[in-house]
Picture 1 (cartoon, rainbow, N blue to C red):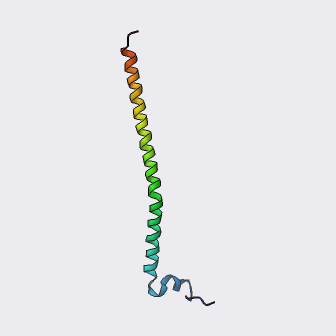
Picture 2 (cartoon, helix red, strand yellow; picture 1 turned 30 degrees about the vertical axis):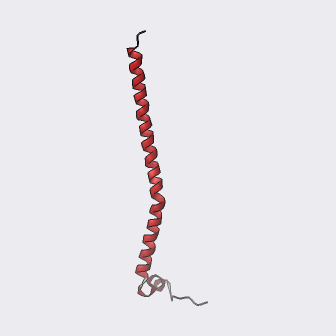
Picture 3 (cartoon, helix red, strand yellow; picture 1 turned 180 degrees about the horizontal axis):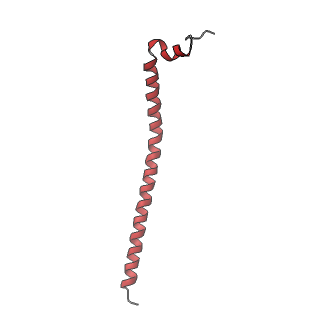
Length: 74
């Protein structure tokens, strides 16, 4: 079995084309990582927003119940 490149440095250089090859690999992996990460981040953001809205609704209900209790005759 014969290796295509004489050493690791030659492998990285790929006869002058290495810079293009490794940049394309880097861009590809960065895009794949972002495609995996963005939905997870968006899900966390939506969960926080939902919890915030639930707290607001709960406080409004408590405020309404407090006003009803004080305005009703005993």
